Length: 317
Ligand code: SD4
Image (cartoon, rainbow, N blue to C red):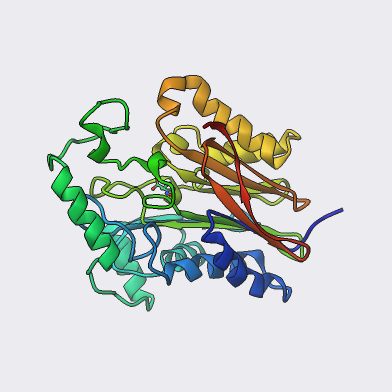
């Protein structure tokens, strides 16, 4: 038996995102349209971690990453785009109207404006402004190129490094990247992810949420997966591609996510204890599952029979 349509999404903010996606899925619409609508819903809100109200990079600039993929392996992605609200729709536009998959930075913004997207003001949201001021105060504001500063690695210095301590988040800051995947009434899968990325990242840093195979992967014969957490750790293993491949080999969505998490942990257990990374997956039958490194990740599900916020299983307390 197959549960369809169905949409699943990251974090508790996924509840409203699923509602937006459900409007499309429940009336027989395409999974692709549903995941775009879901991502747009949260891009329209003020959120620490998605859209133009998100936390800036360490130069005080908000840059967005997003990607989208449909049932035919069409994909679009945008990295480090500034002052454009609906990064996910830019990604879709790239997918549908160009021979390319990804545009970044100024070129992406130029493309968006040429395609009718409005250039928004540069101002930070009040919440982001506060967070940034706080970060500047406490941090020794020295550019450190290419050093990932994980909490625990440099006692006394690490809390305010270029990469904010994602795993300390318990609702406060620096999580809530929105990744969602859906299966529509026709049995087709699509996925999208949208984020302002790691707070206080180096200007120009692009994370997993812009990378097909890391932020999102969809294979219409098998399933789809998305991810949230420290993007670098996901990119290292092409995580969502890996999750989908495990499902292809017969694993349940939860087991597939768990195996991808195990892949990360087994390489360096001590380091894995210092960051959060989570995978969320849906298969062709509408079965879903998740796995995280740390406690605290939740995801949202919406189908005809279910509307729930579910705590993910995890490795470390
Ligand atoms: C990133 N994966 O930019 C994102 C951050 C994230 O919830 O997931 N936050 O690395």
